[in-house]
Length: 182
Image 1 (cartoon, rainbow, N blue to C red):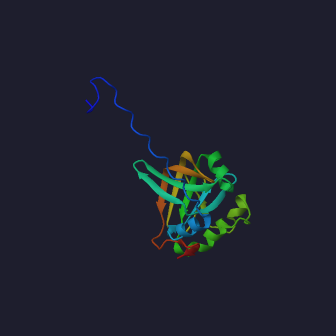
Image 2 (cartoon, rainbow, N blue to C red):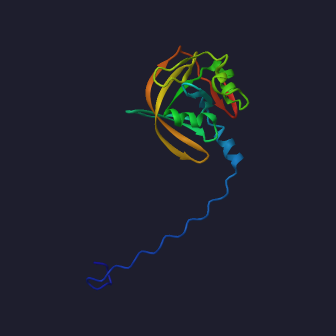
Image 3 (tube, helix red, strand yellow):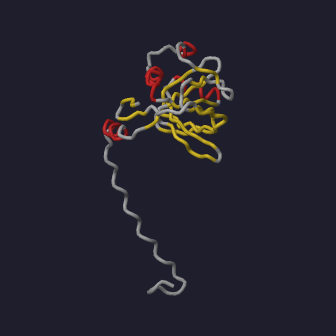
């Protein structure tokens, strides 16, 4: 029973919570600069059996070991985006410190597309996805597309790991403050 109310009387409704203050405008370049101070590994995401595509991706992370899941963020405008959705899977090559040239190649928006994109790039076809896997990488993962989530101007691709392998030991290629770092 609430003090001061007759038995059986309804309790008064709680006061409404104050409206949250409007969020301050966020400076896009400031956010970019802050995020640039977080070092990430560098991968090349590939997809496609007949007309392969690739792109450099550093927005990649492990999600779960049981079941084995990873995620990678891909701009909706990236050529590989539609290929991943059409194929229902993708592959990732985790680049070593000596593979900065490959990272720059797959980040270049003016490179040839399709099979020509892989001319001069040592790779082999993945057994699970048929997507190119770059030789000399520290590790490789092949994934089926488990889910796609909205991530603003990107799609967050959740991959269920179908196959994996490790390359020779070595140091990773890192991306820090808008530059590749061996």
